[in-house]
Length: 207
Image (tube, rainbow, N blue to C red):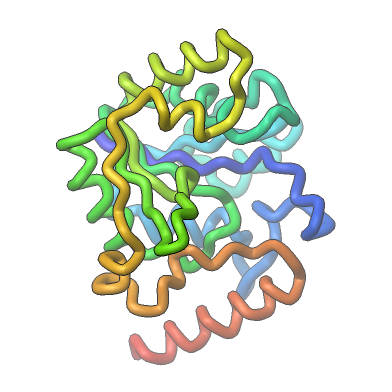
């Protein structure tokens, strides 16, 4: 079984509101993400920051399983660890709730590669890695997360240091997603408008 984990518990400080609920073309952003990767996963798991957020999100994505961040405000590793505790898959694609242009082909490619390593993490030519837009072996990642959390290391870099990671160059990903729109993060209202324009262009090209 393959899971898709969407991390929705961030504080969205720059955006000024909960990004998961932001409307794009009449649909909440988290709904866009789940719909786009539907063919890649057998189940969906959403990591919420609070029980109240979980209850609101459940109305938007009722088909998902939910986890509540065990230590809110301490970073995405805690949200990921909470989500993996309720995940049934052997492999998991991990995404944030602010990438409405995520490519299912990229996600599927990472999941295929992950069968031969503990994690597949995209990495830009400047060395910047994307551990929150990646694929993981669930059991190995659970063990690694428990280890680093126990020693009060709450950063994703510490998690990756405990895993056998295949770093996937974004130059390779370009062959699947030429404009690398999968990595377009909506951090501001201006980004939200840009995402709307890109989605309209994508829809028009498919007609």
